[in-house]
Length: 424
Image (cartoon, rainbow, N blue to C red):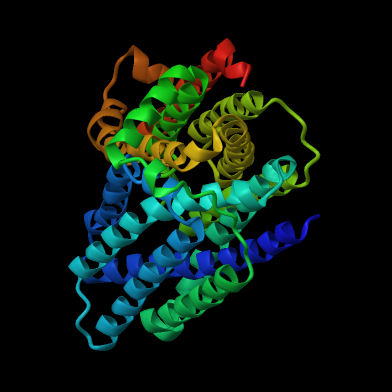
């Protein structure tokens, strides 16, 4: 293990701690916002205002990332995000915090994230040996899912104990620690082109599209990931909670257990990938893992009638996710030229995340105005579906899980058959 890779492990640990602080702040802001207005729309707009600038800017920032120091970009992005948290702290301390302040802060964080994420992705490839990329992807999945499991628990307790201020203090402290590690510990080599070689944003975008057109396999991987994100937002990250609550007499304990098991599934998958013992074709890791996630997870979730089955479904759905992420990471690092990585990663982020707001919006509309009303009617189709998923509130959302399970698995299997993908 080379010395800089050891430094990256320290950096990874510091970032995981900072991510925990940020996630607790996000959860606490949701609690604070909901207590102010009591509507789901105010919470949904928090996500919308975060994704909107991120998606738009990601199409154009890649050239900037390739032409500048990745470490400086990461330091500046982290600093501005910390300033936003500090602003929220000051406003809250003066009893002047309003919901529009949170929307504005989320827009700024989304704006900086468009620079931060591709810079971080490129930096990872410069620091981590290629043979360790799958392991690092597994470590990232492990920390992401561990944070997803722990942050709501910690945030809920701390919010009740010390309110939003206490969580913001913890967030800022974890940021400072991670910032110092990035500044003084991690060394990121930069191959920055001379001024004469630097390209404008629009020329860079044109070259990105030309590159993806010439490398159809990579382009298809990016597109398919966007579609898979869309399917997952239709159900798991959108209607899972209302479906379980509707079908369990509003049993929040059952919902909490299912969400915790899903996080544990991601942790287990991350540990397996980070062990370095999985040696498989990258395309196989992506598409067969996705197929299993949809086939076992979504369909079982739709057919389930109790917490045990829903928990098993959540485990089956989340455990393959780290394999999908690792396969995609290896394909991109192996095939994209060094001087284009920032731009291609930025385009990938824009394309893959563009389907998320659409999935979230459409999922709610389909559940409330199409599937739930349809399952209240009496016809031959609903009679068959009633035997599969049951009747009453939530049955329409259960059918949606059956649909995404079938469509997602068939979509994954069909694209795995393409030679331009399997040869990557």
